[in-house]
Length: 275
Image (cartoon, rainbow, N blue to C red; front, side, top):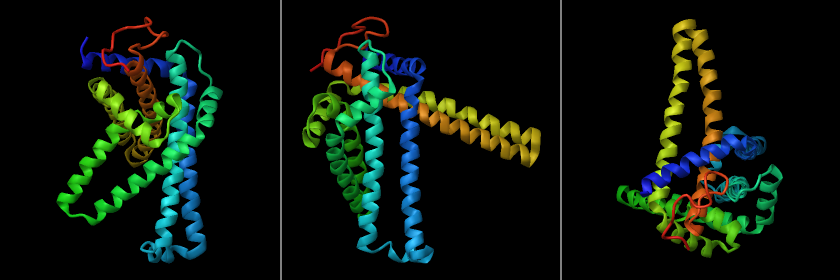
């Protein structure tokens, strides 16, 4: 079985886990809600303290940069925390267990120190790259763009490494890159397949807009648009959960050579690159 075929099998298995454990969708919902609350709170506080005109005046100040960095850190932390919860639950299902929401919260909470450390490290790297990109020329921006892609690929498995191998940020980054090297084909195939599925599913939302416009004029268009937006939000929630579950499945395959005790057999196919 080739890398593309294995990646596709892991993708389908990730979607089956969502169908079996629908409650896992609560984690990306909570992540989105907390992120929105943080951003709204930040903007409301800024508006209340200095007014709308003051917001534009302060954007070049160091105080604003510090506040924005804090906002970025909080949002990043929320994302990683709930991602860790999904990965933990997915791994329990892959090991043949029955995951509960409390399992995800427990796993994320037990690793909160490592999550905080990684958040601080990764958020700092992200902000530095963004600042360099904004001040660089065209060639510099292209180079930083490639560095950003390399960073995203190299840190793809950081969350499962953090929570299952109990290491610090630098070791987690190195370990993640090593794991990715062993299953790069399956990882790319799985993510491309997952993206393709949700892009096709997302196109269905356009039908609501088109039908609304054809059948109900302006009013129908507005109703169709509202239905499409709601559908796309729900689809984004499912896609986020599926991505985290796929990461857990790929990590398990990379490190043990096994796929799942829950779906099929203990070892559906052999991974010669396992660690």
